[in-house]
Amino acid sequence: MCYLIEFGDFLSTDLKNTDNKQTIKPWEQLLELYPGLNEPIRESWNDPLSIRKIYMITPTKTRAEQIADLTRLAQTLYLVPNLFWIIIEDEIKPTQRIHRLLQSFHLPFVHLNIATPDYLKPTQNQSTWRRPRGMFQKNIALQWIRSNTNRNDDALVYFADDDNTYHWKLFQEIRKVQSVGVWPVGLVGELLYERPICLNGKVHSWFHFIYRKRKFPTDMAGFAIHLNLIHKYSNYIFNVSATSIGQQESQILDTMTTQDQLECLANNASKIYVWHTKTQIMFITAAHKLQKAGLTYDLISEL
Ligand code: UDP
Ligand code: MN
Image (cartoon, rainbow, N blue to C red):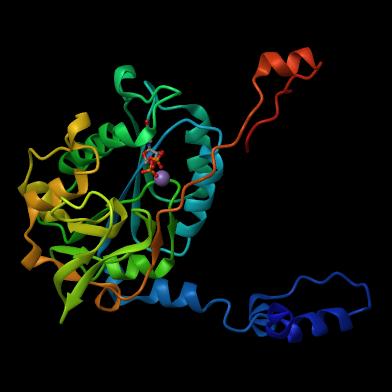
């Protein structure tokens, strides 16, 4: 198997060490054992563009998978310097459980909240795509940014849902954005990817399949906006009405930019660095059914 070949040296070195003495290896020696393992960290943290801050906006809904999703995302962020994480819980109050989780990572963050009104939440029989997902929360984040950053700061704003998958190189692309940058998103729109089709760094057309009427047919994960534009269009908020579901990306881009001005990133939009993955909704047995089987959860904590 190929991982055995790649890690062969490490395995044999380790297995040869049969004297049973547990020694703590210094970092330098670890790097010899795992050559190249620190390359992503070094490249990402040494990137001269990392002087430009990223404000990353993550709405998060209370669901069984939430802590697992946020853990995976937070641990991706260890690879990313100078990023400020704005997390907005879909709750009437910020919860202790999410606050504790966020504190455990020691990443720079702010923890906000707003509850999606009940009448807009999907009921059990409705498909969720007809409902605004995380839009009230994104609007709160836009307000926070306008009140807590300087309109002339050189920084970027990116919308990052909690269950997507992000390669660390995506954040290097975000930092190249001068005004609005776009790139492919994997596993979205009933396709392996949607993407802008670019000629010499400019968007020529879009590769997409569903909702063909979108002017900017990209997912939220497929663009970043300069902070100045968030301040310039100081009244802009996402429209949460049912008629605009599926149009939100198009609407913010149509307000703040034009197709001509878009910058094609990720090697002229030929690389996928972000995937619109969806966490499988787990079947969790209701507590009253567990009780009938004589089972109750004891008070272990998620951390
Ligand atoms: N979300 C939310 N409230 C909701 C539904 C979703 O805050 O009522 C958040 C969710 O945690 C995620 C984002 O909004 O960060 C997008 O939601 P989801 O991943 O469920 O939607 P999809 O992947 O289908 O776009
Ligand atoms: Mn999602």
